[in-house]
Amino acid sequence: MPSLRLSEVAALVGGELVDDRDPLINGVSGIDEAGHGDLTFVTSRKFIAKLEKCEASGVIIGTEDEVDLPAVRVAEPYRAFAAVLVRFQAEDDRVFPRGIHSSAVVDEKAQVADDVALGPFCFVGSGAKIGSGTRLGPHVVVGPDVELGRDCRLYAHVGLREGCRVGDRVVLHLGASIGTDGFGYLPSEQGLLKIPQVGIVVLEDDVEIGAGVCIDRATTGQTRIGSGTKIDNLVQVGHNVHLGRNCALSAQCGLSGSVVVGDRVTMGGQVGISHQVEIGSDAKLGGKTGATRSLIGGKEYFGVPALEAKESFRILSALRKLPALLRRVALLESRLPDQGRKKEQE
Image (cartoon, rainbow, N blue to C red; front, side, top):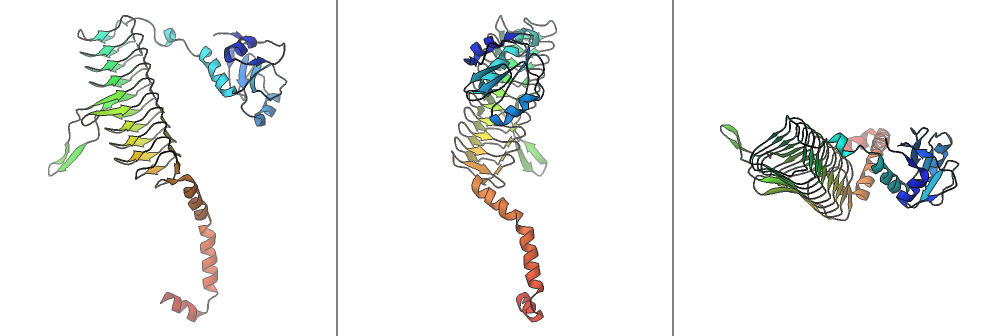
């Protein structure tokens, strides 16, 4: 494990060492779990009280904060802590050992750069191209005619089906499936007839795809994920979806076929988007939102069906009052004369 002096942390993040104390930092941890030798951080003064019981050797704090522990002051503690985390993550050579494992299978018509790493039982199909610096974990399948760019990282059991294209610096986590058939069937007297899915998936540069994500190939043309977009675990992206640049999708979102999403859109967990719906750039969809119609960009949405967040919260607030309101109505009705109730019923 790497070690840093707190003064080195300050230099790394462009911060200020609070005093002369300069402990050795051997690890990083959250404020509740930090022990001796660990570095932690606080993003708000309301968390500073927790430091009284914290055993961390150092802490990253805001520019106006005062603490008893050895500390580094910065304008953005969380961003600084993230920069330190980079120094403590596992090295590539440990996760993806260099070279081509003896059990890997590479088709003679594939083009693989000299410095590519292929883990145990990888498969690279005919006509596939893998760029310089890319590393594949165990059991990764790169189908025929797939193109993988430079410096990509594919963890174990990732599957890339035929013809798909992946840009540079793309990360695919455990079990991601790219280019599976779109869900296309035609009802007939013989049952559901499968519609051939002859398109591909394109992942642009700097995309990161979580574990267990499924991205369907297009019926024709492309399913496209824009550059810089990050997709959390267990997300389903349907055929012919076009997802813009620098979007963020949380776990268990589901995008139906032919959905179009603009740039910088964020979706909370379990958001669902109906077939052919368009979501404008800079929209924010809260968790469990269901978009059954197209949504204008630059606004916040919540609920099923999706409404602007403020309106949706007003409706939810009113619904919480509904049981009491019904009880009041029943009480008022009970006080009406019998004749009045009969007239009301008529």
